[in-house]
Image 1 (cartoon, rainbow, N blue to C red):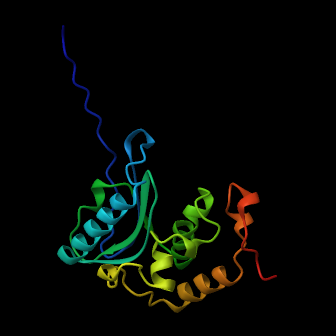
Image 2 (image 1 turned 120 degrees about the vertical axis):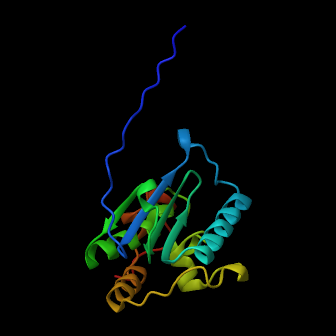
Image 3 (image 1 turned 180 degrees about the horizontal axis):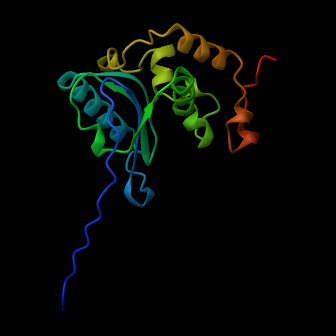
Length: 175
């Protein structure tokens, strides 16, 4: 029996120093490896250790059962090219990406409102982390336009726009 090895070359990624990236990583075969609370906490611990070891700004995240989203800005040489990521080039893209990450648990039907999902950056920013050990995990949002967009989104939040399961929505827009 002859063994054949196939090598697939990945297209080189465009690396921009000090750019903000939307990073997404999925589990193989959509396995729910992060479904358990202990696994989510372990992942938060990994993020905390990485932040202490490497130079990057970390503003947003969402830990789902089978994938994660991160919004990071490396501050030096990094191996960001080794993971699935997209450069965020404009302020509008930054706002859209932040809100996309924040609304991920609502779209998945896990919650009715982004602030209710404790494994997310928007919940950490607005409610504080439920675990004191992660108090300094996220960097503050220093862009006033981004902060205003987040505040507006939350004040006018209508889960029917984001939820796959409209009948579970209990939080309605103030309009």
